[in-house]
Image (tube, rainbow, N blue to C red; front, side):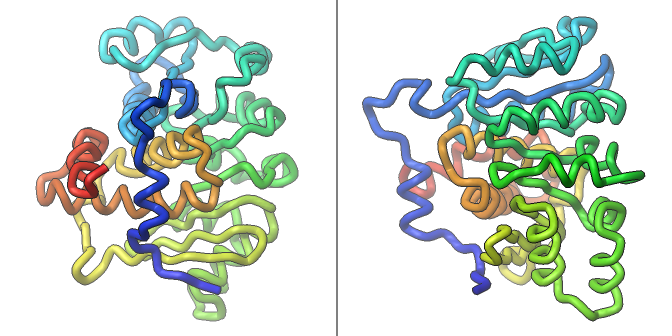
Length: 284
């Protein structure tokens, strides 16, 4: 079954927050960041996770990057994360319930952190460097993936991770949804294949499509950092106990809705800040 992603009453009710809820009722997401001068992508993801309603968000970075990130963050907490062993230590706290890694992480750090993150078996979004770092040999990544994970490749990353499926997609042997479904079945996690038409597939075969075309065309999303924001939105929703597939579908819709709300001239920093306007329009 393939469904078109649209706003449903169930989606709207899941996005609402009960009046008496505590911040920990909405989860605690951690976004991993990399070296100095490369932190913008992770900060975008962290801001998006917080704006979409995660109760708390922590940015975890090398000690040398703390000052740079502290100068630009307030509501988002910071912690030093020197190595993969330290990551496991942080997640002894069961309230830390979602992870996002890849944006601005750097490939060497991704090679170390991704296996440790996946070992935790928490809801996790893998994007950008967390995917690209494994393109020379995706097998170690693929064997560690699990059903609590969402991977968010664009077509270039998909081509490097799944060259056979990308070739079949390009020659017309597979549709976008079929390619995403085959990938999800292969790696046993939710696959979000990004583009103007975005396909989302679950290992069960469930699939959804969102077309940012026609009345929902948002060409100004073709700007640096917009994918980092999407990764953060999905991680924030998973912190709020959305399932990986549900978070990917809802996050994709919100991502485009925020872009449509802002309009031309959009840059990635605008997307998280537009989410409150989207939520007000939904009467949340």
